[in-house]
Image (cartoon, rainbow over all chains, first blue to last red; front, side, top):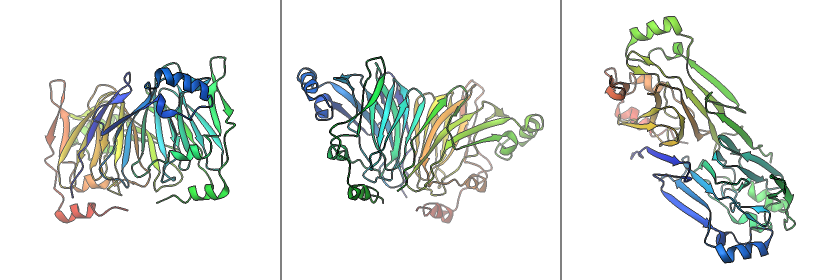
Length: 208
Length: 208
């Protein structure tokens, strides 16, 4: 039996990355077309700063998959499109019964979660708060602060990601927007189309 | 399908605990009899402070097991028995192919790891360093600093713990001791008895 070697990864809180990762990716404004309610505001912003990095992920993936863990660091820039805060694409795990843990390190955000049947949960994330995303919740991170939001995350290595689930419903049911008084609020997404009972049932069947 | 509710747990770095845990336990000096090389020093210290808390764990366990995650916070007091630093009992996962992640928050420690065949690996843990313990490694935390060692951890919910594996071999092969010059060093454990090829093979079979 070949043993995998232990690894030490140092997290740099100010840069929002860690060393010794096995992978790194960045999402730029242009990659996030279609996610925001205000398409005109998005087009205007993308025309001048489409290459701007909105968020980036440094991760460490093991060789094996089943039973192992993936971990890493997410850094999200502050910003808005219209009154809607910068956010990640969001996903449900391809193996939908897999959870995820996010541990806030700096900045202020929320984890926006939606059940297959359309229930919404919102958990605030700040320094030293751990958000546990249970199995079967679609989840997306939103930076509601004025500085970088940095989080450490971990999830089962065989989880996978289904990034299309949100687009298939016209977005998540809820959007997180500036309330105009220095805080954020949750508002309904007018384009949201609930999943059918058949679609919901199928999601609960995507287990190993 | 009943959805589990998301959870937010705030980590208190100075106290070394988190709120909203589902469980909490403390290990006192008396619980650690037999782990240290210097039995006389242990007996002397235990006779006056056997109730002293050496380490404590606050954890959050999900309802389900397979595919889910357990996470929490460990706080280890600083101290020594003779020249040997305070340490946790240590374990291999009962499902030995399960990994664990430790994320240093404050203080200074090492993760002492041993393969079934007796190889040793030592990873330093300080603030913002993540130690990935791959599948099949016996692991034990050691506080080599002068203050509390606080770490956040996560591991698969179906891992289980085999705490007896270390005692069955007369301890881990390596001990972490004060080097007399303000640092630590690794020394051989004279009582260590290597596992047989059959015992090693059996550990690699404890997979789901």
